[in-house]
Image 1 (tube, rainbow, N blue to C red):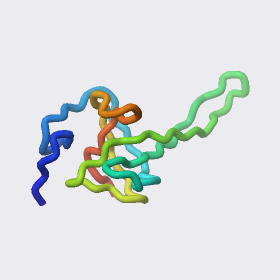
Image 2: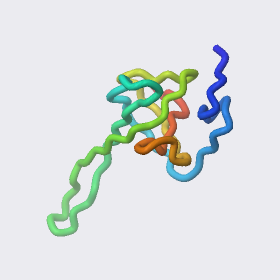
Image 3: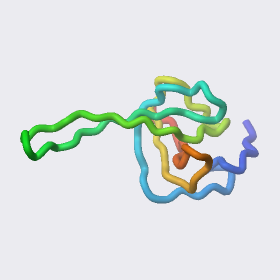
Image 4: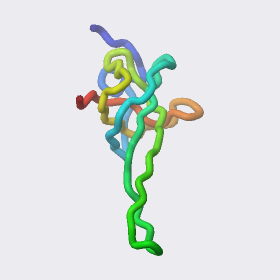
Length: 94
């Protein structure tokens, strides 16, 4: 499949920098966007316990990668692509 998307990090000219995260795609309904959910823990000093939290990050989903719901993906930080998207899906892990 030939990819001629300029915002693709592999075939286009979009550079990635900063944070690299891994999470599960929970929604891929909108065009070229995937909502990636990331689970993490935060330590609460007062109670000396951990709190489980989750974050939902909208990421640009190029056509050549085309991540679907349920996929575990790696996302990289990039320049701001729209009002909400500043991450791009770089590969499907599982």
